[in-house]
Amino acid sequence: MVTGRDVDIKINTKEIYRYLGYRGSAPEEEIAKKIDSCVEEVVEVSELRGLYEKFPLSFSSHDTFLIGDIEIVSEDLGKNLNGCEYVYLMGATIGIGIDRLIARASVSDMTKATIFQAVGAAYVEEYCDYINEEIRRLECREGMALRPRFSPGYGDFTLENQENLFRLLNLSKHVGISLTDSMLMSPSKSVTAIIGVRPMDAEGEAEEDRKPHSGKKKDCSTCNKKDCTFREG
Image 1: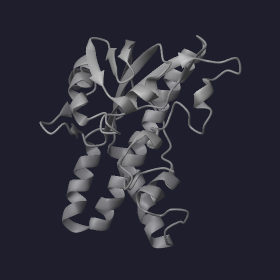
Image 2 (image 1 turned 90 degrees about the vertical axis):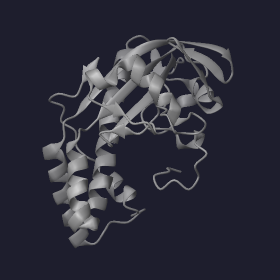
Image 3 (image 1 turned 180 degrees about the horizontal axis):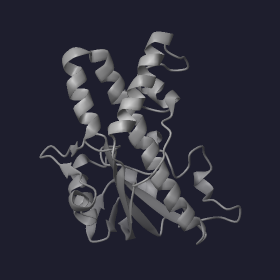
């Protein structure tokens, strides 16, 4: 399902602050005003487009499994998908406008360019949360719950897996995201992810998923990059 047109999403200011390194504190008034101005510019130029599709899942071992017709080897993703019956693949972008803002600001105002980077990162994550909620509502009706989304580049689920996700979803055609030779996406503020689906327990959720943002945020506990600027927890 393609989604994104006419979506109204509020960017989480606290997430922008976190991306900028303000952990547990707020920036001074001048910077806060600059952030607010950058948010307005980013929203004005952004074009949200996303796609998600359901695929079968089958395990041959704890770290080797099939999603659709592709074989994936990843212990970390395998743990995330343990107990799942099928998965959704998703791709989302806020468009090329943010890249143009960053490029222009990088010439004359590096502070503004840095803020644009943070705003773009927060915006695309909010959009991914929106898509996640669409999927959650669909699956909840069927008595199913979601695992936290998991993207190429986290843990041992390498960026090379982007190629398969792009092929299965045909993201270039449907969403306008392209993939470089180094497995990076353009527009830069784009996300691909896998979301596992498993049965709810009697209390209405998957037993292992009783945690904040379950089935929405990426699960940083499964990633080995301990020095990541954006790491949670």
